[in-house]
Length: 286
Image (cartoon, rainbow, N blue to C red; front, side, top):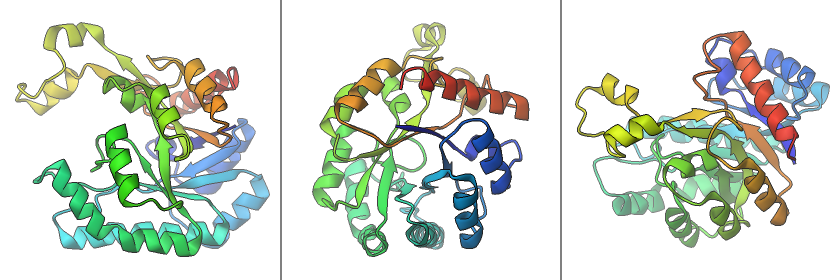
């Protein structure tokens, strides 16, 4: 397994020059870089950086709403996904990560039918380019690929070998889903892993309960959220068990650190330190 990073946390503090990111990642001991939507894409520059820094590009991630009720917005997102598929094909990058999209006005079942209509041309384009499309299981980001039952339905509709999962155990923790069972059940579909942890804020959970929809003030609702993302090793995820299960299924891909930890955010020093701490923790168990 290789340990990489997702660029989003660096872009959030104003570091969006890809060469600067590659240089720092290489110097800091990372082996791969996953490129988020905040990075400008230039084919020749990407090719040069790949060769010069000898870092694997894990994939391009673009999680936007391809089922938006706004048809114009929907097409913009589809075009940007196809752009990433084309570049990935040119660079022999294996993966483009996306969400399924979701129209919040209709049910999950109706969204699945809508996805069945909209997705085939995107998948066909990926197959032609030799690229695998992978779904990250974030319950936000306009997504219905959020749980094992939904994954099962999607893969039954689209059994293509060019379709898989970017497996993120952090979401499964607060959804009360067993991540290790999910790994075993979908071992043939896991393409790479997002390394992110979740801390359960038990004092808030004990007072408010799981559902906070009855809190009308949005700011207050966010403050009352009973869980938050952390860097690996600082939350509830049993990473030793996760890594053991990945080894048992002979997974040998990239563990890509998706840094969304509010404690290690807010400045360049803290974000970079958070990434390095996450890498050091994972390096100790891989």
